[in-house]
Length: 381
Image (cartoon, rainbow, N blue to C red):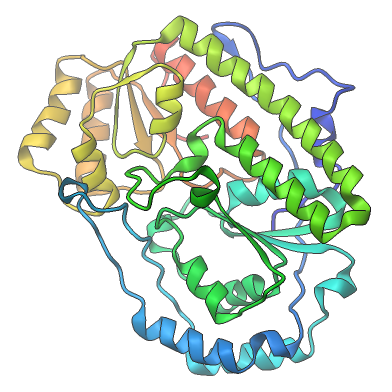
């Protein structure tokens, strides 16, 4: 899905008031931000010549799924990128590039976010001078089974700016970038930006409230380098973004003041960073969360413990990954509901349409507030 916008974040500007929260039990999400689909341009043939054929074929032959058990001290699972690019498809891709307009011809910087939440931040900073596409963008599908297509390969090959998560979450991006080498392409790897080790246990970095501010600053810096004539414009939109993040920070602080210490359970560590920032006490052992995240069956003992959290009403909320389910997690969700524990859906990719990154995070905070105040479930954002 293409994610880009022109003046979409003007409603977050200094001339309008962002009402995030004025009462502890009235957390209001930001207004929705629209996005327009734009066809992206493919660079000229030299970007997709001999090296892309050699490297992508090697990538196809070498790609495999690696599920790592955190109990053995491993890094988070490399996403199951099912690279559906055959030699014939890559050759067709290279040939199609000959007849495609270049990014310069479009008059916009070509940018890619490996996940749509990162693409959204690029779009908020870049505005009308940046054409942004998101690779993983469907909140109704399991991102663990994401399939790399020829259109994804073209998008990465054409990109002048890429933002990816790292920590093994989107390792296919490194393979695609190697397959279409471009010395002028800026790649922002969020793991590297934050200085995180490769064995970081929880790869869902975007749920950490401070992360996107750092990403936005780096995006603005890189865009200003790529298009220095628009540097003032990018700086202004960064200021607007940072202003909106302050309102998100306020919502986090208000929630923490009222609900800190409340016990919750989770299926996997999707929103753990946010739960920690909100002061919530996650009673689900990380071992159980890691097993679910890595596609490993949790031990009977861990399942029994998780069930006891609901049966004995030790937790007030169950955070359920709405994009990934299994027999174990669906049965736990049913048990939580029958035990009177409200369920709150959390997502790995930003729900669309109708959200930007800030409003998505505020919607999650709102859902958690409703669960704690009135035991209301939010099964879908």
